[in-house]
Length: 618
Image 1 (tube, one colour):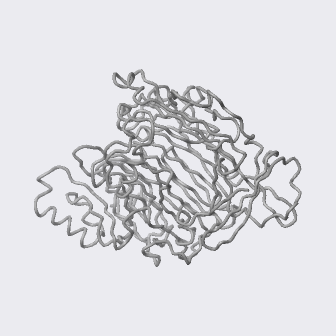
Image 2 (cartoon, rainbow, N blue to C red):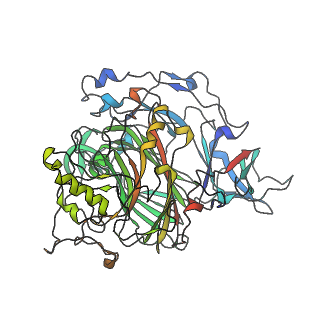
Image 3 (cartoon, rainbow, N blue to C red):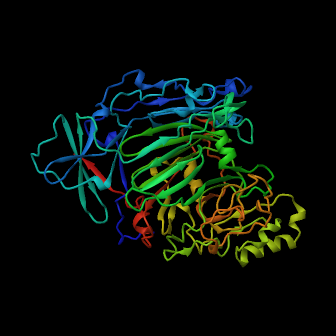
């Protein structure tokens, strides 16, 4: 449980309000309704002529009946009182409205249908970039909020650290300001109050906190196809190599590579689902330390590629989800940059959003997926680079464990008992005893289906992923993270299923989950077998701390300080083909980036969800 004697550190925290929180300013947002099953006329016959990623038109939209106009969002700014005058601070207004996601061309659209999704008015909607030969061009303009100006659904964001003392009565407003509201921000534990002023009438001039840049080659068309060929099902066209030369024809999408930077950290995308590089600055952005992470990883149905299941194949973030997804949108402002990815194989309308602030990032996932059998379910985790992080802590063990590629859990790492390569894994006596018993009683010959399954160890972590914070630290930086579910995101069917969301942890340099490049590269991606020798002909081995931070094919790909969430199974979270949220699972992961190793700070940076700031406008 949260420790009420430990105040939450707010220096990286963002404050996000809705238009409805500013009394008298925002006009009502529009209301929409979409009839279910209207797409069946297409997908019930064949997906060949069905539309690719697009927004389906709702049957009801109140904006078409009467749409009042709110204050111009381009002329809303934020200010603090510096003791003598008002000083502008970065402040962002993002227009928000509802749309209905449809990808009838997907081979799984017959199951997924159309899903209501409320999100931002984006600067760029990547799914529209389908024209062109080698360099993608948009086929249509971005969608805009049907209610002009500030409405009750829109969001306003600023940093808690930009608040200050109250301005004296009668203080002169900045030139050009026509209206103003004072935000009183209260910390519920310390009772400390601070203030920020929202003003109307001037265009923003404050220097932005976040830089988001697509690579110069990010719009290059590349082959984009899952191992399940019709999942995602992008339009067919020419695709090109890095030099801009056509090399073939097939399902294609832009590569969508990009980087994000602030004065605290730098972050890298090598694809829509590939998040491969996080570096933390020790000197407020003048330089950045080495890359801390191998990559963000995801698994469906099987934890590793060598497992066998009676129903389903192996899915991962690289080939499967990267090859069946598109960018929903990108938005960049002075306070935050936002990027949303749409589609993950048979999760046709799965959406993942990353929101980048000055000192932290929030990843939000809308999990809209069919039934997934028990035990292996879905995994999502961060795998760290070998030797970069030295200590892992969580709520149950704030004293921490060494990140050394050796297992720390007493049990739960139930590696495939019929695969002899896991005999050398240091997973503990209980886990290895399970494997030996499984083989001794003849279960390996009785059935061809045997898996690597990870279960939570109650002596190591808490029973639910949303209950504990995690902290991973080393000399080059610290990351504190926490999963949470916001009350407004809960659905009747999804709430119960979050109970089987267990914390996942794996520090095992010998465990092979078939993707990644550190400490050694996965040479045969997705294969059930892996190359056992390095390029010089010597045997590959598992990394140890004595090897330092060297990345080499002399090492196997392993899991180093890897942690995240394991959803044991799904009854269904795809909204039963209805166009409103019924059972989708929506959860957030917040990551705070800190320079160096400050010791145990998980409780003071990992409880913003439990100890939220209270904001009142007047």
